[in-house]
Figure (cartoon, rainbow, N blue to C red):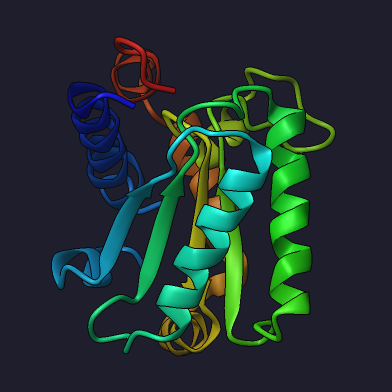
Length: 186
């Protein structure tokens, strides 16, 4: 990927994170590590499926070996090659299997975001799908212990998905379009 393209991808991911994830409070745990600069955004180089798996494994190994004070979580951006949602789900499944094979289950977990994210039983344009829509396919690698600490401080973690759906459904059409369909975003 060309340097200008990398800058564009990174800028769009940062804007999505700040305006949508943090701005709409879709993840009540995201603001603090972002403000503390403990979230890294890593752009996966193109080069085929095996290269992507290797890149992701290298980054997960790096996260697992770095103190949480330095890197609490990573956004692995798969900007090329996983535009098809089913291809993205396939690599996500492989990455989860690699977490198991590496002995990282209980230490690392994955969250998924994709421009065409669609929950089972929904229509493609249902607003609830936008809770997991991002400008590019993204694998969010989180530390289990950080997730557990954040959950312990939240009054109702079970209610977060429903709150998010309600928040998106209550957006005006103008705000929704601005956040999710303006330009090439989501």
